[in-house]
Length: 271
Image (tube, rainbow, N blue to C red; front, side):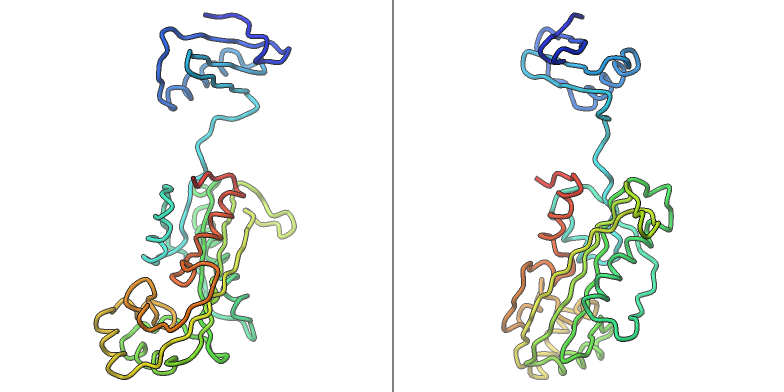
């Protein structure tokens, strides 16, 4: 029934429709209905869709759009598993970027730079496809006594790493980037604005025997693909004597606490 609803428009002209009997209507149906109203009543400042159970106020100034697409710029199965914990739909795309450290680059700076580089590499691969998306990039650098420790890649290299790290304290620097492609960085003249966060985790390894190292790598072969050979979400927790940090997920490769903060700031409802 078409009429005027004075309060809803606060003095402005308003179209009000009352539906009888009360109906539950799926969100997509509401969106389609509201788009039809926009086409036929585009000159009106406000629409009020009313049932006995609820109101839905829509203004043409407020676009009816779905949440931005989330993209994980990583081939890591561990980061994919972590992001899946949030229960948000996302896509995975492999970044293609140079991860070579710069001369005298600090570990924390390297992790932050590479996390942004991964996100931007995915955007650069297909700017039209990823326009309007939020792209997540993350990188981790492990350092002990000034030496960097990356992913060993092989059983023999992992054995060598664990021998060196036995009984020592290692700092894991995890960089996080949320690249918002809905905006533009005017200072750097680049597409997308990068929002960065860094989380440091301090880990002390137990003193490990040769037998312990071999048994660990035999039972946890995926440790060869983890920085410092420490797969903390698995059997690697048995290597650790102490851990200090703001987010236990950061050691696995994706600091979820910091990511939730960045997503909320970008307008994504996590809960």
